[in-house]
Image 1 (cartoon, helix red, strand yellow):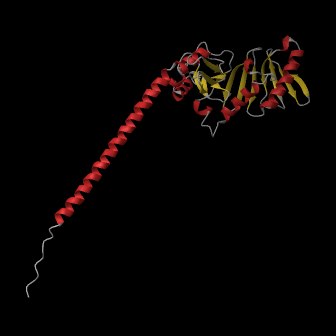
Image 2 (image 1 turned 180 degrees about the vertical axis):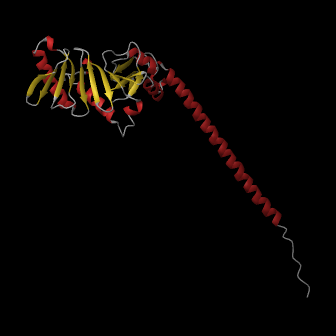
Image 3 (image 1 turned 90 degrees about the vertical axis):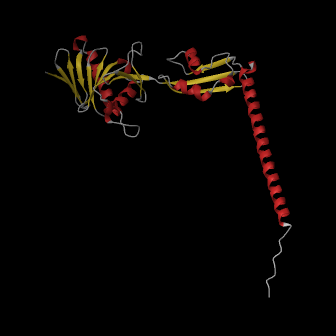
Length: 289
């Protein structure tokens, strides 16, 4: 029996043509949506640009006042100039992050905050480093009350600051987590010297001489003599120094001394200018040669 001939489907072409037409319509529809979306985004972007330009040039937002607080070393007008926020500037045109970055780039400024107050005011708060001493690493640098090296010392800098000598940079401060014995000792003495009640104030210290083996020795400005403190127990040693200083003052000007050795606070040795020693133990004082 002969095989039945397969008849060609004469409707197939029409079906394929319909599917292709629908695909094209969907494709054109998608393209139109993308173009429309891009046009909307472009319009919004242009609108935002025009709005920004208008706002940053509008007189309504011009700064009538730019207050500055925290100035001790720096001049408020200098701070405004560094921040780019002088009176008359449009407050919306000031980039706050960039202004803060410029401020903290100044070596005297530890931190800063800048704020807008609509419609026409700004404030700048700065936090300056407080120089507590000068440290000698072959070149002179200022250190803050936290012991941070923040600026090279130059002429015209703060006067009457103690000079720290005999310190290598690696012996000063390893990192924030592990501070060296030298660092902690010097900063402890400087902290005690900031008290108005201390007999050895920072202003009276001309130099802090550091020896990693024997500790700290202070060279005082007036009267001109040395006070050997060694390491540790600085509160007790300075109290003992107050007692010895009072004793020597009562003994008359001829009993001025060149050195007081307080490394052992229970046996204080004072060397007068006449080269005689005064030894003050727990129970009192006595003289020797």
